[in-house]
Image (tube, rainbow, N blue to C red; front, side, top):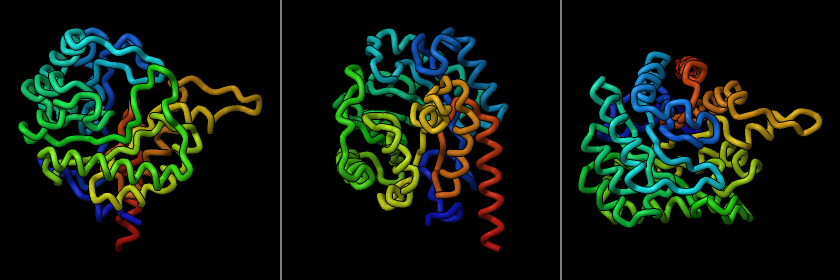
Length: 288
C-alpha cells in the first residue's frame, strides 16, 4: 500500500507532509449541494477565505455545475463568474485551483493567479486546454471522464471498473504528456460519480493502490456524492440530502489519506482537515 511517507508532491505547488485538503467554492446557481450559496463574487471570495481558515490548503473555484443533467453555461458567463473570484482569493495568498473544462477560462484564471487547473474532462472537452496548460507550465488534474452528463449517467457500464478506469486514465495521461504538460505536474482523479454507479465508486475507493500505479499524485473527490447517499440510505431506502453527507465524506477523506492520496476535494473542510491529520499521525506512528 502506498503510505503517507511515499506521497509525491506536485511541482509548482506547496509541499504538504500529509494529504492536502482542497475546499470547494462553487460560483454557480445550480451545483448539486450548494448551488447559489456563493454566487456573488464577494460572497464567494469570503467563503474561500473561510475554508482556508477552517483548514483548506487550497481552494477549487468553479463556475459550471457538472452534476448529472446540468446544462453547460456559456463561456462569457463562466468567465464572469470565475475570474474575479480567482483573482480575489489569489490576491489574499490562497493557493487557487480553477475547476473548468474551457481553455479560455483556464488561461484567464492562471493569469489572475490560479496555481492549478482541475479539468473534469482531462482535456477532452476543449482541444485547446492541454496546449494552454502546457504553455503556462501549470499543474493539471486529469480526471477519468466518458463524456458530458447532460443525458444522465453516460456510458457507466464496466466489466472491471478498476481496470478500465486505470487503463483509460493511463491513455489520457499519455496524451496530456504528449501535449507538453510536464510529468511532475500531472495529477490523476478517478472521477467518482462521473459515469459511475455507487458500486463502481466504492470499488475504486477500495483499490486506490491501483490508481497509484499510474505514477502520479492522486486527487479523490468524493464529497457529498450520490454513492455516499446510497451507503447512508435508511432501511426504507431514503437517501439523505447532499448536505447531510459530510461525516461520510470525512470518513472517505481519512481512508483516502491512509492510502496515500495527494489531496481530497471537499465542500465542508473542518472535519476532513481533522481526518487527514489523524490519518497522518497514525501513519507516522506506524513508521516508528
